[in-house]
Length: 371
Length: 84
Image (cartoon, rainbow over the protein chains, first blue to last red):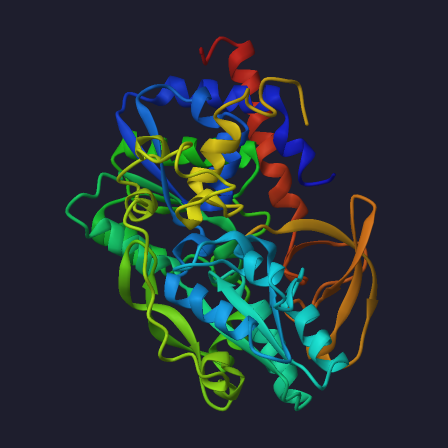
C-alpha cells in the first residue's frame, strides 16, 4: 500500500542502519515516545539492527497504559448502568481495573461496544434516543480532535444522550517530567509523529534547549524509525540539541491549525493522573463550558469510586523508561496478555505486550525483502 | 491508539464544513472518513486518517525526500565514500 510498503523495504532499512553504525561512537540512550513506534521497533527487529552503543528506551507513549485505574473503574460502573451503551476502542477492553475489566463487564451483560471512531458512537446515540451512549475518550493530542469533533457535532445537533469519559493526556508535559526526573538517562528523543501531525513541533523547541536534548519528530514505519535514529545520533555526535522533522510528509512545524482550534474550543488544559507515574500538572484536557455538559463523569454518579492498583505491576517504571518489560519478575509468568497485571501487557501500544508478542519469535520484516 | 493510516480520497461529500466527509481507499478497502479538519483536501490526494478523521494531507515531495537521500547514500557506497 502506498506510503507504507516502500517504507518497509529491507534493503533500504539496512542501508540506513549501516550509516547509523558508521556515524556512532556512542553510547547514546534514545527514547521513542510513542507506543506505536515501540511496537514497530520490536516487531521489525529494528533494535537488533542498531550498534550496541545505541540503546532504545521505551517511553510513556501508550495512552491506554497511562489511563488511571480509577477511570477504568468508572468506565465499568457507567457501562453497568441500565440503558447505557459504553463505546470504546478495542484496546481498552482488557485493561485491568481494580477488580474487573470492560470485557468481563460485557460478558456479564453490560452493553459495551467496540467502535472505530468517536463519530460512530455519536451515530449510535442519534439512532438510539432511548439509550445513554458514552464514549471512552482516551488518547494523546492525535485523538483529541476526533473526540472534540464528536462533542462539537453533538452540541451543534443538540444530541442529549451522548457523553464522553475523558482521559486525554498531553505528550510534552510527560517528556518534561521524564527529563526533570533524577533517574532520567535519556540523551535524545524520537517524538511521536502523529501527535505532531496535530500540534506541530514548536512546543518541543524550548524542551530541546532547556534540557540540551535532540528531539526528532519521527514516523512509524521501519525506515522512518531508522532515519529518526540516524538524525538523532548525528546530533548527539555533533553536540547539537535541536528539533528536527523526519516525518515531513505528514508533519509541518505549525501542525493542523483547524484541529488545534477545535481542541481549544472544546477542551481546556487540566491536571491529569498518569497510571504508574502520578499526577502531572497541565498534562491533560478536560471539557470546557458549554461542552462540559457532555462529560460522563458529571452525567453519571461515579465520583465516589476509589481505585486499588496491583502492587505486583511495575508499569510505572516501564512507562518512564527506567526498566524494560523483561526486568519485571511477573513478565510472561504471572502477567500475560490473557491475565495481565497492568495495561502495558494488553494494549496494542504497550511495551510489555510488544515484548511478549514479538521478542519470542523472529523479527517480522527486516529479515526478509519486504512485507 | 495513535495509529494513523494513509488512504486515497476517492470522492468528497461537501456541505456543512464540520460534517464534510469523503470515501477513502486504504489499499482497496473503502471507508467513510471525516474531512472536517482538512478543508483543503481534494480528490486523488492521500490523507492520514486516525479514528475515522483525516488529520493531514500526505506531502508527495516530502515523501520522496528520504528515497533521494537513500540514493545519495548508495552513490557514496559505490564510490567508496561510506563503509559499513
